[in-house]
Length: 527
Image 1 (cartoon, helix red, strand yellow):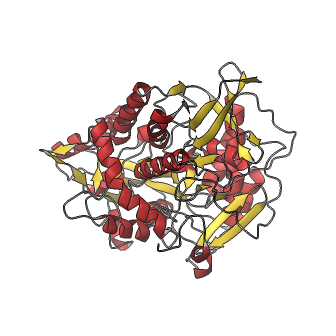
Image 2 (cartoon, rainbow, N blue to C red):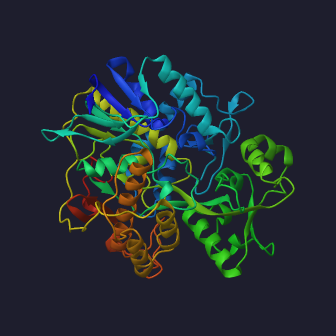
């Protein structure tokens, strides 16, 4: 292994959180940004609907806070949500100043409504190309800011020296391994949607940052809370392409094969109910009828649909469906991880020298069910807070460890299932509806007999990371004996007061921290 030159800060991941963190730090030292693929390839690029912010004339951060907490089903950390809602406007104004081309209604910003929002507070760009527009703008700014960029390099480890993360290990094209020393590391590597056979996430979303943080000793939290987006294209042979929540926000209706608009019997907010409610309703309707569920926009103004959703229309038409005239077959798909690396309000993890922001982090903002269009926003707000904390040189004040951890058993070593078996087991047995029995089946598939798998290629590492995350997710889902938000247990179908708290996992085992006593937000609940 060769050793490279030292950097003041290394940011791993090139979505909105990683790009924004690198930009914030660029004027103050030597910054390296590492991307597993091309710089612009991330979950951010595929985000369609938009980014939420209380900047409208009838809106306020307090209303945004209330909607976020309501969607989180009792598990949001109020202090974290307050930070998100209050600091959002400044971050969005910064994006506007950097040239992000948010759509306009004349001279004013154009707002749209999404599920569980009480106001139209979602900004969009290029109709349904919001993430791609932000990604392009920030990537260009990073290049212009003089940040060192390393593309097509997989971070495989975080060397720890004297109890502190001291850099990263990289697997380079061709198989060479390089150690890059650094004063501080920020992980912004996104989620792990590729654990599931149906996902809206791109191929790069293999949980790498979560896995390497866990191996370095960091705590993870709330991995059982996976958000399944209700409406991904469900067409034989086609990818699980996301059909944005904004389509339902503009008036799209869900219908079963007979044409019945079934959401009226499920929730008073119908198609704009919280995502977990809509996703399970579609799942149950498909099972009950044995047939498809469709998203119908044929009754809406075709000019509006053409203008607002050009990317979605183009993709559907490529696969032989014209949404202006035909129903779109849809079903849920794994979309977003509400849990992640446990951090405080400033991005500190439980390992000194290691910060995390974006989807890879568990800040307490999303609770059990993320409010639509809060994900891009969280990446901005907490990336900025993390870098400000790093620059203030208060980086050693890391979050406290959880108490009363119980052993988890073997998580690594030995054989691993192939990727197809892993993803199929997680989708079928640890997906939208779980139980002790189904989770036990998943756990069995995840621990096949055989010798230890070699880790030589990027694909080897990705599979090992997914297996580790899948085993941890199953353990957390078994531990939480209730249903709440994105975690639904058929054998425990209702929320239970004693489970209002965070499931915490580390190399030492699994534990539980009640919400009222949690310390991971860095401030008293309600502060």
